[in-house]
Length: 413
Length: 132
Image (cartoon, rainbow over all chains, first blue to last red; front, top):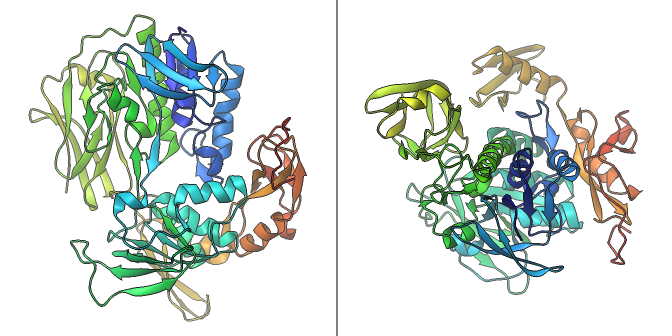
């Protein structure tokens, strides 16, 4: 099978990338699940799309907008289709129940596989292995899509956004949420979620705490929590047993990049995703990436915007306009910056660039500078920066032309 | 909030997230800690009449999925949230349903309608769902 652009993943990133690319070329969209929308159909709460639609939508509404557009488009959508491998020449092996094994040759590929939740194994929780322990996203799916309640008395470990949202959801569905426990001294999710999910329902948030034991043989009977010190070591004497039948883990997300690694694409250890340039092109020519596969976003609007850029550039590549002179200017995280995306500037196309960065430590009244060889390119002031909230800096199109050496981004008081 | 009681709010109007202290003595309300006017407006609204968009699910019969996600068309009073979710847990609709369609009127006696937040088609296979 041959086509121009193959998009792998039918979540918000894949939908927006496929739609954008289909304005110019033939597009095939491959989705592992039974339906399009990715995680959005189970995110029934509202607060999506404030930036793109200028109003607050629920997750299913946000997805429906794109799914309806895809249905009206010429995009060849294949659900229940699992991509097994991808090579550096944009050749894909995939499988589905209707066609068996299929080989697809594309001129460009967009990676939009999203991310996965961290599990108990990845944070090395001690204790027994009873039933009743779920990741927050799994519990969300059980409650919001399957109509099943995972437990009646719930402890939540981790205060990422999905954990906070689920604290509220469990409460509204009649369960008792004993509390949310967070290892770090600050909440992992957005402030608005701490307020509207926890404060609204008087759910306690215990910062600098973790689960140190899990008890119960067949079914979870309870967990032991303890306070941790600055080095995250549990403090002896602070242990407390909490009877519960359900433990929810909201302990972070990891970009899902098995296909990316299998293809030999250069990765960024800080983001867990591929290194990309401002066109969202990876180190392998013709393979683009967007959304949470590149780095974990706070809001879906930014996923859709990065995906449109990837889709447009992938289509241009497929049309034969993508062979660019790669200048490969590194974009490096400087003072108090954990990571910056994109990690490279190719400078090939004249277009405005949005830099996404996360800080290491919270700070007030900061100056964010983008500079090269000591020369300032752009600066921006922010009243407050916090690790859970992504910072965006716009680089005007013309500013990239004159950059010669490596660029760094610093966040200073 | 009872009289002569102090309470703190975190303003969520912007990423700064000011902690606003509300001190009340009889009828007088004093706010401190907010860095701008929006913080004051937010806290006064939260004190007078806190409202939220209600989102939950209802059962759908003969659909491709057993549950239909729904929302209130407008914000409803915060303290009605649990009762409204309970009321909606007893509502069943029949597939197909279009996104935006009204599926329940006057939730919790608020006069506000509840609409579907996605489309669900009628299914043509035999699988039985808990929603049926």
